[in-house]
Length: 345
Image 1 (cartoon, rainbow, N blue to C red):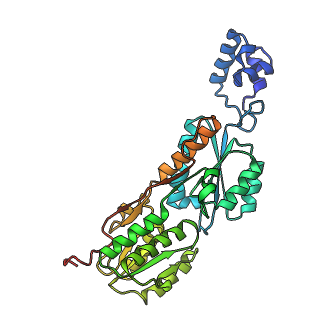
Image 2 (cartoon, one colour; image 1 turned 30 degrees about the horizontal axis):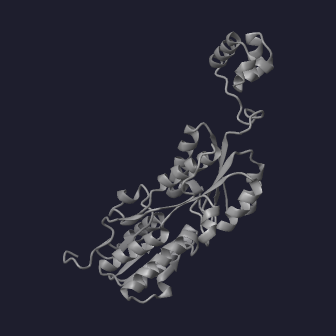
Image 3 (cartoon, rainbow, N blue to C red; image 1 turned 45 degrees about the horizontal axis):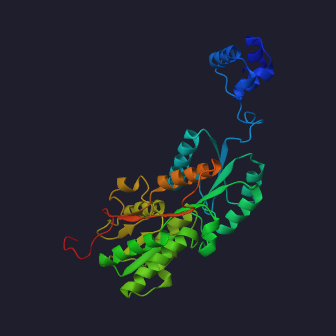
């Protein structure tokens, strides 16, 4: 591998001169020498190591992305289409702006705090943090921190003190439950693998729709699913005993809805003729299912792009017009829910 010393010897100059060219300090080097150094760099395909490229610069040109894994994943968190999509959107904006992205995820906040302190980053983007975790990280790193889907009691003055891009989670839960009620369903199960953060807000929207329709709120209709796939299969098996043709299942995440669709179809249950299923997120495979999944659509890529741009604007000293952004959601009506009012079922 070619080094700065090797380049200096090829050009016939000092390593300091080569370093000045690499770091853009061209006022200290003649035009002729600059051209020679740049020509050798190009010929040798030299790339300055990221760990040492910014030692003399004010910025590292690195943005850290940290994810709190609130759930168990059998493989990688990036196997979840939501995280894969948002991280991909972040990376594109970050790299196009000339920055590198460093990614770290853990179920343990102490590990995340320790890693964030060790990184020489210009700023951080957090995913699925609550307000206390966000506040702790911001105080610890003394760098700009932008959140995606910040949860907790984010109201009043707190909204003025955070940078966050999220969605109207409660509204999404309300819209889908309202739609299922309009389709003639009175027995609606809501299924999630936590009762925290976004899932809790979606559940609140579900409760509001039931209340407006004058339907009873039965706590047993909130089904808490296991983090572990094998245990979730047992959850679905027990649910079979409580289901009938007049009930609907509303999952707070598409990946769970799709998993359950496969399970019930293998049991010989026809969807939507014998069971209606709805999801939340509108991940890319939702429209490819048979039947295609009715869901709440959120623009995951837009969240990533907006969060990345917000952090870049902060780093560049540009004014941030909205520091607390809630993106809208809308229903995506497909074939996995039957309208009981229609006679063709």
